Length: 372
Image 1 (cartoon, one colour):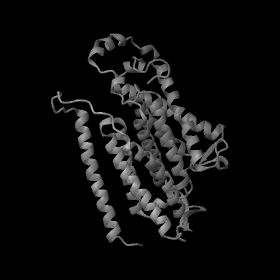
Image 2: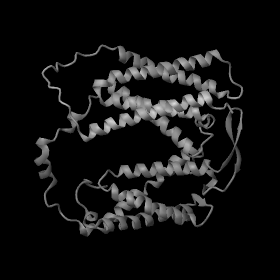
Image 3: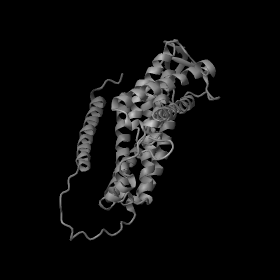
Image 4: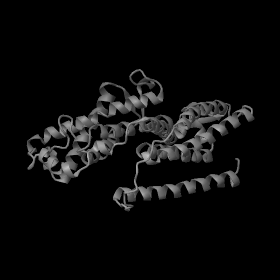
């Protein structure tokens, strides 16, 4: 991990023993994390802890959470641990805001009563940070600020071990030239960035972002977040949604990076979106607005629009003429096994078992579950 220069080159920390690297990272990360918390509380007055001892708990999280993480990812891009820290602290800020709220269910949704069943771990000054008042924006801003601990800790560790840095016994350029002829170029392994690849990636990221939003909302008990509230009402519906989105994400990922099965993946995605659009249209027109859940009607309409747009493009791709397949008659049918292919087979087997259990659970709850 390097901020200046190439991260794979030897550095001072490499001269330390594994235990020494871990100890240094824990101490430095804890100190830098404590300083950030102290400045935020005592100098900037951005937030205040309900318990004065909380700062020491936060310091322990920085030390024993971030410290080992920086050791494990010291050769990775600095953006990787920064992203992890940002996501984790974003979730923690949302959890701190929503978990202690006393909720009231009325009008088909959960309402914030303005009461707390216990004090929050910390409170932001005037309920805002950097002029932002919405809990989601506050969480994103706070998570971004917390990421500064990562480069500060890495810089400090490098400065402390600067004199221990040794030159490599063999230059990396020589190692690269030695194996260059026996390694397939990375560009040759990348799939062509054509329309099919880009469209499948759009589906992947669209469902992936929605799935991450839903999971985070469930974890932090964000019952007032848009769309998330309905997942707390019906567990079978939540299981069904998780199953559907997981399947769509997997099909989009497989179809994007495997040209040979991209059309088949698109066909399965088309079937799923056709069922979704058809069922949503049926529920929208066949039944009046439910007075208990009036927002469901708007959600059905937005679902029809979103899935319908994807369906139109999917139909175009499915019926688009397929280019002629290359002549493989001279290629011998040789079974190739590698760790990657073995893992992929195990993954699909586990995935099939998981979805079978999902289906059985949904059918069971629908047939035998109590409506109450």
